[in-house]
Structure formats: structure tokens, C-alpha cells
Image 1 (spheres, rainbow, N blue to C red):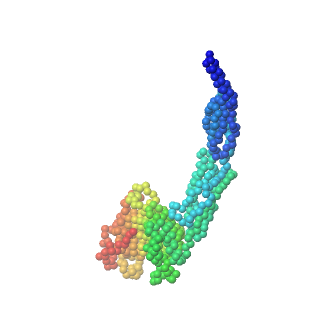
Image 2 (cartoon, rainbow, N blue to C red; image 1 turned 120 degrees about the horizontal axis):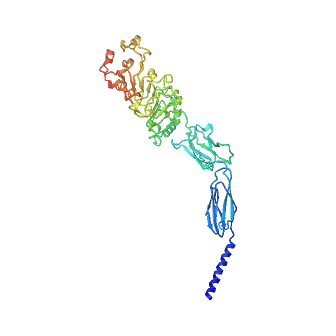
Image 3 (cartoon, rainbow, N blue to C red; image 1 turned 90 degrees about the vertical axis):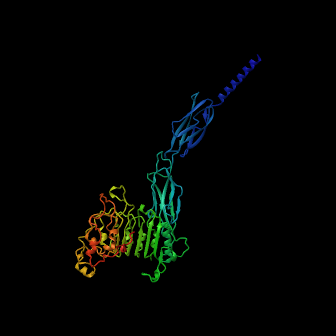
Length: 547
């Protein structure tokens, strides 16, 4: 009896406590409105409930966690970053599952202001750096597409790579990397560029950053001095990335390998040239640019030589304008450099007597190379202007392979020049040699004046009468050898079976290269010049070197 009464009392007590809890926990939330910035984020709200509840929203940019529960819980509202410049509103609905009562939380989110900002508003660069390192990058944060505007006065030395602004998920700010490339400053003055970022659309910007680029001044080179020459040589070597430079040798310029200085007694010497650079050779280097600007300070140089650029056959370079300012040059070699063009001012080098442009990548013989522009030139070497050897031109997918392959016929203007030395070997010149029947002929007076020529030469075209060295071997020439060549007074000096007659490979038409009337030997020639030539002369002794 006592036990039964105790249990009854205990059950009533539990029931009272339970009823008391249900009444004391009212259903609700501690916030009915939330203000959120455009960048989004998390916001905590307190849900008070005595029953099961569930939270819902129709907005995909709002997430509730947890989205349901029992009793009182702290919930997180997770708001995505805004997509547009305009504000947006969403509603979260929390409903008591038992009573069907509900509460709403209104969420207002600001839109992103239109803005273009940069991570570093000021950049300073040196006047010089190794090729491939002359650039800097700027991170631009933006929610509007933009154009980069470089002042016209700075466009010659400061350029930028292509970039893309993609708003595939709305116009929230994106970080775009813009790469700027800068050129060498050859002047002893600082250069400044004020870069703007202009929106492509007509929008009002809350912020619009600029970029200030400052380039250091170049080390001054004292012109027309021995000291200026030494600084210029070191600078050229550094820019070319010469494999073996004079820098750091500790030697005076007098002892630098590949450098010759003016001394009294030399042809062309003057007191103003004393101790200055007469000749300099730059051999084995690696550059992807034109001849360096410091070369223009070698104003006393008589001869310069640039030879063997690493992987030159893969490059397509221009000489640049700086070498063209050395109008005093008499001899110039730019060989295996990777040239495909001469600068338009190259014709300024009108005092050249010797020019070697061998082993480059020219598609055609530059039009500026003519006797009008270079009246003093006596030697022109243009051999091996091929990127690589193609035996059969009719069966190749290669393009832009050099070797004057764009010359549609043999360049007659070259043999009309009447140079002392003309070397066109190992190229892709094609077609027959010009017969030159319309050209000036040998006359009886020529025979009398020379006193070394047979009368049988009268009436033959007088082509290259002063040429001592002529080489056209290993091209793709075809057709007949013309009379002016077969009976040329200097043919035996030219080592014809090595450096003239011998051709190679197949033409564009698929025909074998070679002349149809190539002689077996030189007997016909010595018979023609009987009494004027020595048939016992050792032809090999007269064979010139062919690069």
C-alpha cells in the first residue's frame, strides 16, 4: 500500500515538471533581420523551441546549418559572396513542426561596388636585366572588364601581355594577373610611366587604382673615349650573354682576347683614335634580341664581328637600329645570329667594304643589299642561310626554312654587282642561271687592254669581270650553264667542280638539281684559253675556303 502511493506521487511529479518545461520554452528566434556585406560570410542566430522545427529558404545563396532540430539550437546562416553590384534580399523561414507556428529572418546583402584595384601601385625596375627576366606582374582585383592604358611616350619600352577577365559566376571581384615587359634603358635618364586601368563599360567606380612604373637611368657611357669603349664592350657582352666575357678578368682592355686597339702606324689611324677599339669579336653567345644598343658607342671601330648565337637557326631576329649608327665601319660580320631581317637603316653603313651575313635565316636576299646602297662593298658572303637541310623540297611539310627560298629565280642583281667576292653557297636558290645575253659584251678593245684574254671571248657577256671568288654550290640550280660562266676568265680560280657546278637535292618540282651541260673536266676551258692559261696549274691551290 505504501509502495503504490510512492510511485503514484513520483509519476505526478515528473508530469508536472514536463508540463512546466513546455510552457517555459516559447518558440522564436533572437534576430528577425540580418545585414550582410557583399563579401558574404556567416551569421549565428538562436532558435528557441520546445518541439521539432525546420528551417527553409528559396534562395540558393543562403545556407542554414543545421536546417532542422529539436529544442533550442544555435544556427549558422552562411551567405555566399554577392554576384552583382545591386543589393539582394532573401528570407529564411523557421517553422515549429507541432504547432505550425513560424518565424522569418530577412537577410539583406549589399552588392559589390564597381572597383579596379592593384596590389602594388608603384613598381621600380632596373635599366638592364638578362633577357627573359625583364618583366613584372601586377595583380588587379576587379568586378568590371578593363583596358590597360600605357602612355604613348612609354609604349616603346613598356608593354603588357594579353589577359582575360572572365565573369562566369557573376561580377564579383576577380583577381587578374597582368604581366608587363620592359625594355633596356640606354639613356642616362630615369623613365616614368603612369599606367591606367579603364573600365570597358560606362560604370561609376568606387575605386580606381593606377600603376606608376619607374625605370632607373642607364650607366652613362662617355662617348668617343677609350673608357667609353671599354664600358660599351662589357655592356654588349653582358646583353648578348657571351659565354666567355672579358668582365672579371682583371686585364686591361689592351689584353682582351678578340679586341684590337688603334695604334700609330695602322692604316686609318688618327690621334683621336689612339687606344680606342679598332676591332672586336663577339663569339658564342645566347640572345633573342637585336644587336645591343651599347654597340653604337664604338664610334672608332673599323671592324665588328658577331658570330654563333645559340640555336640561331631557330630564331627570327632583326639587326636593330643601333649597329646602323656606326657609319664608319669598313668590315662587318653578323653570322649565325638568327637574322631574318635587316633594319631599314642598315643602308646607312655605306662605307662597308666587307659584309658577312652567312648562316642566318633569310627567306630572300634583303632588297637593301645592292650596289647603290653599298658602293664601296667588295666582299659579300651570304652562304648557308638555311635553318636546316631539306634534301627534297617537293616532299616536305616544312615552311619558313630560309635559304632564300622565297627567291623565285636566281637573283640576277647579285652578279650584276661585280663584287670581288660573292658567296651564295648552300642555300635553296633555284632555276637556271641568267644567260645575260642582253648584258654588256667583251669587245676587241677589252682584249687589247687586258693583253691576257683570247679574242674568242669577244661577244661573250662581260659578267663579273673583277670577281676573284664566286661560289654557288649546293643550291637547287638547274638548266644550262651559260657561256659567260663556262668561259669566264676567272673560272679556274673559282674551283668550279667544288664551288660552282655542284648542286644538291630535289627542286620544288621534284627534279634533281644540277646543270644539264656540266663539263667533265676543264680541257675545253684550257683549249679556249690556250696560250693564256697554264693547264698544269694546281686547281686545289686556288680553292678558297667556303664557310
